[in-house]
Length: 123
Image (tube, rainbow, N blue to C red; front, side, top):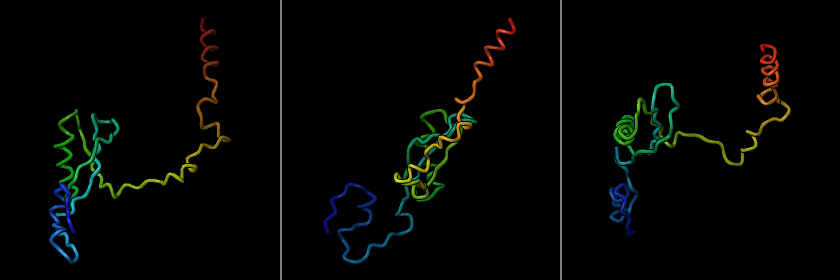
């Protein structure tokens, strides 16, 4: 089998030099971690990219070095990409709004009429 990959993670396995099963040693299989950072206390964490790391501790260090220096940052989260769950696109209808529950929508309230009436009485 010929391996023409330039990716060091693939070349490290030396796939073209073996005929048997490939064994992966400890530390060779790095995971992808998604990185979220917080610009100031109380703000939302925002996704800024991803890093490859052997474990969560190293991912946090790599994330700090990669994404903590560019913009103001007070906190960083790392989450292994394989641990993120999402609904399938076919399940989109479960998020549809129920039109019979207009009390959940603020447009159903007539606040401006009350405010204008109050203002006119104050004059």
